[in-house]
Structures are given as structure tokens and as C-alpha cells.
Amino acid sequence: MKTMDIFDPDTIDLAELQRRYEQFRKRGLKLDMSRGKPESAQLDLSVPMLRIDDGWTGDDFISEDGIDVRNYGDPTGIPEARRLFAELLGVPADQVIVGGNSSINMIHDALTRALLCGPMDGDTPWAKLPRVKFICPVPGYDWHFHMCETLGIEMIPVELGPGGPDMDEVEELAKDPEVKGLICVPMYSNPSGITFSDETVWRLASMKTAAPDFRIIWDNAYCVHHLYEHDRDSLMNIYEACVAAGNPDRVLMFTSTSKITFAGGGVAAMGASPANIARHSALLTYQLVCYDKPNQLRHVRFLPDKAAVEAHMAKHAEIIRPKFEYILGVFEKELSGIGTWSRPKGGYFICYYAPYGCARRIVELCRDAGVTLTPAGSSYPYGIDPKDSTIRIAPTYPPLSELKLVMELFPVAVKIAVAEKYGL
Image (cartoon, rainbow, N blue to C red; front, side):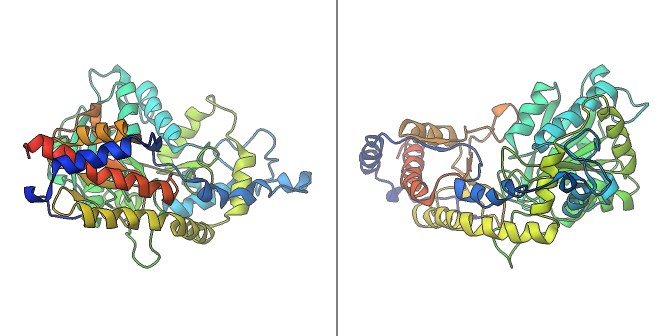
């Protein structure tokens, strides 16, 4: 992350900035950078998967365990798919449940089961307790926060540093029996781009918790989303750490192919201890008969193992890497000394940290000029960023030509907001 955050007021000419802003606004553009979505060129990479069943006969729809994927059966996923996600999550294949297209849906289901039934047989259902609290590293993923708020889970923000959340604070909070878990994106975090250090992972796995049913929701959405082949982050296997620490049931790990194949038609999975998998499998029995197995089979024939996924993701990186590098180049040129920003090695976001009290105004200025950004504050629980500083930049969806237009406006909006805030 850049460390400069002191700007020279002599570099800001408010009248000139307002002139440039009005010129941009009069173009009447409508550009959307509010979500971290793949662009169409990325989605095109997986179109051959849709044609993979051309000419298939009935025998081609039989999974390894002899189930016709067009019919009922295999509620925890076909063996081939469980094996693929086992490689991605770092657990044995029989400790994986393969679901539908959304890991967010699987996380929501896991939390709902804990609320209604308890994490394990014999545990008090969380919904019967006076309060349920979760630790939320911030800045973090807005959908996690909306989900917790919807389910009535009280959120406690803990600031992220370069190697993860402040673990002294996390360990102190975990002494409260009402604190039942932690939810996070541990690798190329949304939106900061940081990856948890080995020390952080080990402390999460081994820390003492007052709640014996404490759960870590490990949303490893970007586990293979590297921007650079030879310069990438690595993440310690938290399940192995939990086993070594004597807490094998503590973590529920999730990932999906939503940003690998099709965002609207991928496959998701949960990996966990044998006891957790048995618990969730039993509760899943009467929730559904099975997930979309033809889609699972289509995916594993297109991407049969982790090596194939890595090769596929290298193609994604070729498309999105220039966008990240362009934005960072503009920041260096136009905003050096005005705020700070992350330099992620993967994932889908760049975090810009505006000078104190300026984020909402920057987003408002961009919106009024035709550029929609993620709302300021959304990367904090309840939409409250106490410093009004964090802005999530989502480079992937717009083509580079549109991104250049956005980055023509963004530094102007930043400087206007700073000039207004500090009376320059």
C-alpha cells in the first residue's frame, strides 16, 4: 500500500478543477463501476463449456459413481466436482459439498442452519440466544455485511492491516461468549486486496474462544485469481491449522467458479471437517434433492483439475491486469500525496483511501458526472465508515476504453472534494 497521504495545497487549483469537472459532466456519460463483475471478454473464455455436450449420448451423462446427472441423486455433488474443489480448498474430497452457482448462497444457508438448528447437533440454535455477534474485518465485503444484518447477527468491525485483522483485538473479542464467529475474504480481500499472513491464519485457528461453537466463515473467493504468474500471494491452509490446533470444526471454507467461468452459472462449494460435512449434509437432505449436476459435470469436463483452472485463470489475468495497472498508473501520476491506495497482486478490487472525510463527496461527484461507484461506506458494517475514507474501485467490468474515461474524472473528483473539505 502507498504510504503518502500528505498533499501540497499549492497543487490544487479549484477553479480549474471545477472547469474540467463541468466539461466531463456535460458529456452525459453513464458508466458503471459499482460491482466487481467480469467483463464480456472474460465470460467468452468459458463459452466452449456450453458446447461441451454437443453429441453426447445417455452414457456421457453418467458420473463416476454411476449416477445419471440428469436425474436425482448426489446431493453433496458428483465425485468429480468434489475432487476438483478439494484441490482448490485444500481438504479431502469427502469433506466437500458442491452446491449451486453461488458461494454467497451456501454461506447464507450455513448461517441460517446455525441460527435455526445450531452448528452441531446438541448446540443451542443461535436464533434462540439473546444476541449473536460476528467479527468483521474491515474494509470488507458488503454482501457479507448485508447478509449478517438481514439475519440479525450483530457485527463488530476490526481494522485490517497488511497481514489481516488486528489479532490482538480479535482474540480479545473472542472472549465474549456472544461472539459466535468471524466472516472474511482471506485472500486478495474484497476490497483491500490484502492476503492474511501465516501468523494471522494460525492465530485464528488456535485462539481461545468463549463460544465452543465459534465458526470462521472463510470466503476464499479469489483463491486462484492471481494477476501475475510469478508474483502472487499465498495463503496458509486454515483447515490444516485448525486440525493442528485441536479445533477442526472451527472453519467453514467456501469458493466458487463465479469469476472463473460464468458469474450467473458457476458452481460453488463448501469444505469443512468431517463432522461439519455430516451435519450440513443431514440438514441439506430435506432442503433440496440435489443441486444442478449437469452443470457440475460440464464444469469438470471443461476444467478437470486445479492445473486446468490455473491455466484458464492466466487468460483472465491477461484481460484484467492492464486495467489494474492503468488505474495504479493514474493514481501515481495524479494523486501522489493525496490519499493512499492498495496494490493488489490478485482479486477484483483496488482500495483508494481518501483523505479523512472525503469519500462520500468523491462518490457523489462521480455519480453526478455519470460514473457510478460502489457507495462510500459499503465496505463497513451498517454502511458506516468512521473515517469516511474508503472507496472500492472495481476495474474489471468496463472495457479499458471506458475505464480511461472513469480515471479521467476520478482524480478531478478527489481533488475537488479535498479542496472543499480543507478550504483550499
